Amino acid sequence: MKPKFLFPSKCRYLGYLLAIPGFILGYLYLYKNYNIPGFELRLRTNDTLFTSAVENFTNELALTLVITGLLLVAFSRVKREDELTASIRLNALYWAILANYGIYALGTLLRLIFDICNIQSTNNPLGFFAYRIDFTTYNLFTPLILFIGIFYYQLYRSRNEFTVKPVRFLPNKPYRFIGKWSFIILVLLIVITGLFHIEFQEFGFTLLPFTLLLNVYSKNKVEDEYIDSVRLEAMQVAVYTNYGILLLLNFFVYGFDFLILEAINLFTIPLIFILWFHYKLYRINKQAVIKTTLL
Amino acid sequence: MKNTIRVERAIKNITQAELAELIGVSRQTINTIESNRYIPSTVLALKIARVFEKPVEEIFILEAED
Image (cartoon, rainbow over all chains, first blue to last red):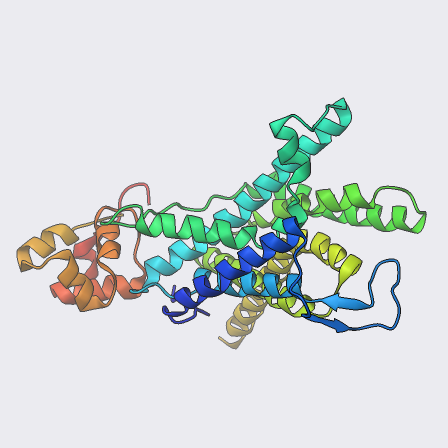
């Protein structure tokens, strides 16, 4: 497995240089309502309910700095890049995405329990975790942070050797089946309830990532070393594509629309992964068929 | 799969760092392979075998559970 699509190793320092001011700016914007004075454009003639006429770009700048910086830190070559560091990187990415959704699942579950049992959340530390932490906003960069943490931990935990943590998948039966059909049924439910204006969308979208994850983290019918490597590469492609699109849309989508974008972002990484992975498998199959007929 | 890299290194009298340098990987990678925690690719296995001037099968040996 040769390392692919990586930045030169010096870019890591540039990454820190961008990400740290980005985080500070983001913190000031989110929690202190700070906007860089004059850093704005008049985009529309009138205010509407969801968008203001004058758009300040402080939050866009913060997010761009954070994501670009973290991408550079995450995907720069290490000093001595070889096939093992490449494989550790891809494994770490797989764990990071899983961990990210694990945290999201925990938060969602807590919120659900608090809602159902009507628990006062103000003085409860778990309530803080369930309500005050805005997962949809944090999810814009937590996959990258978790990845950087896991990757560098595995590289530098010991001076003498790398920590190799193999990835594990759920068995094909019954999880792939459940994953596939729960996704299809959920999407249908979201569309149908949407047509009839029934209150379900929000809950539906909360569940959507988990149905996709069942597909991502379950085995194919036939599984081998090569498919394994295709799978791990697909995750990197998914992360790149996801953040590429996000960086671009960051500058064209504002206000309320951006909140929708954040909600969609909750499930785009697994979605892009599945599309890319199955496209690659299809290509591999097709080539194999052509070669056998030629022989 | 097990391997005899440690023994071969002793015979040839080279360190992990020197072997790593010869085949263009990091020292930690050699150590991780030696302790059977990572199975190298065919390319890397062939490079290692070439350094020790022996066939790959003498350095990497399949075990019953493989």
